[in-house]
Image 1 (cartoon, rainbow, N blue to C red):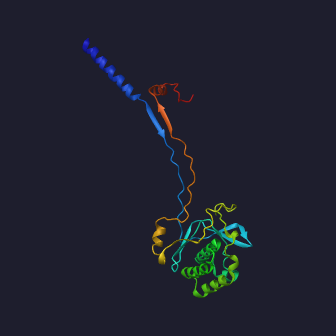
Image 2 (cartoon, helix red, strand yellow; image 1 turned 180 degrees about the vertical axis):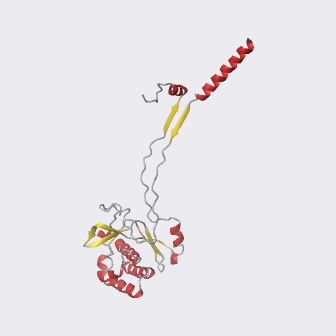
Image 3 (spheres, rainbow, N blue to C red; image 1 turned 60 degrees about the horizontal axis):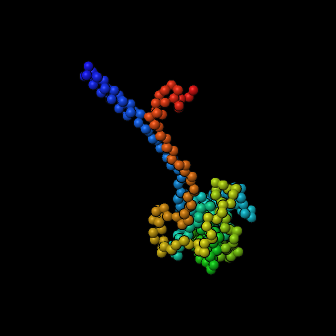
Length: 246
């Protein structure tokens, strides 16, 4: 009888151990990972976005959906037009605007010029006009037409230099709202100097931004921890288990 009794005790012990092992306490943790939209990169070839429901003195308005960096080789000045800046190309008098295509590459020169005029650095209007002239040539305007536009801003651009009303920002995805300026008006239109623009391309490719975009605040709920005890697991296996629907 003893061998049988010993075998039964061993079997009972083994069964008890297996039951305890199968009914060990389980802990599961769910962690929420926020998904943040990537920061739009700078664009060396921006396409102005027309604001369909806004005009200024009867003129169409355009904005940028990406930061636009430009480097003037002669001065080495790196000029960065921030995203959402609103332009109407009004820094170029009407008789010179015929050579500015808002949807073409020549508009980039006018955007840089408008930005320099909006900043309105004292004593730098002539330099802004010269940068505009060189930018037009860089972006494909013929020397003849570039000279006409340049003479136009030299003759009639004084009244549009440094106007407070040109400090204007609109998100093209929310065209009915004016956005608050992302930063106070700078004293200069240049953010840094790179002699002969050496290293400018590598700087942009590195992801550098003159005006970093503030990351939105994301509220992340705390982790959810669920612990199941052996008793909970036993209840789960019963016909009237706590988690079963009636």
